[in-house]
Length: 95
Image 1 (cartoon, rainbow, N blue to C red):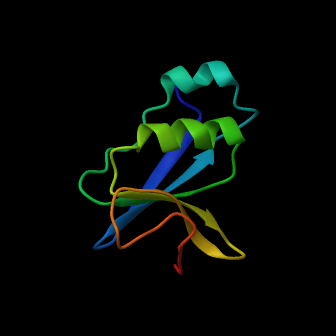
Image 2: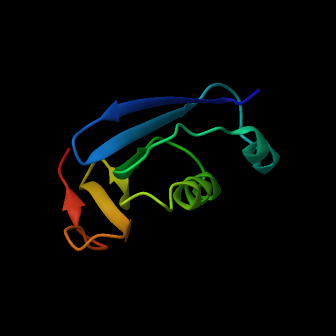
Image 3: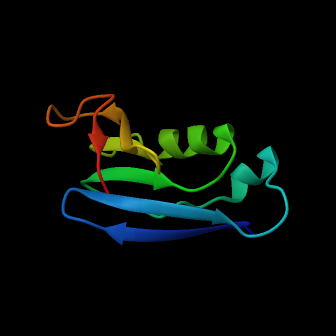
């Protein structure tokens, strides 16, 4: 059973995918059991506290999204991958 809880907030052009590690320490082997929520036809903003390899896994999982951003509370959602001209890598979405 996955130790990660996901919450999705749908917006017009993107979905904010927030995650929280339930308890203890997440191990790399547990990536096999993680089932991220399905997002179709829009961008994804990832938000949550976790190891860099978890973020890498989630960015790879959501690669088909129109764009992917990671949320930094000091800055906003930073675009790290994009398949559309409206959003470019390094752009920031204030949320």
